[in-house]
Length: 132
Image (cartoon, rainbow, N blue to C red; front, side, top):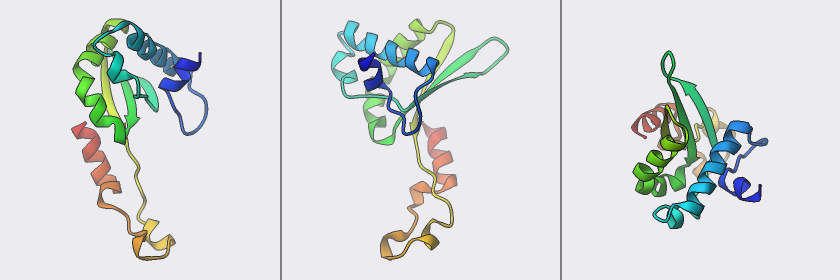
């Protein structure tokens, strides 16, 4: 149970049943797969969702912290292949968890460093998600 908790770190609330199932599969891959063992040791997800993409098809979206996205991209091909084997009939997507700051952000805080970064705007975040 504690190893599953290490693979999913949510900022609010407890992980649901599907997220714990995905976290358990990540732990199983870390233990059994020799090629993914070292790479998965320090990686974790923030959320997992299952969405319908067709009449009878589903996809799994894994949300990962933005800072870990490059590390996930290094092993993405092998990780997605293994997870698609475990969750048969479902596609697996890895998307970074990004933060959107509203227009009022720069007005509510004081000081020179209170400006909203361009990478935190709604348009920029949406384009970055599509690029992922």
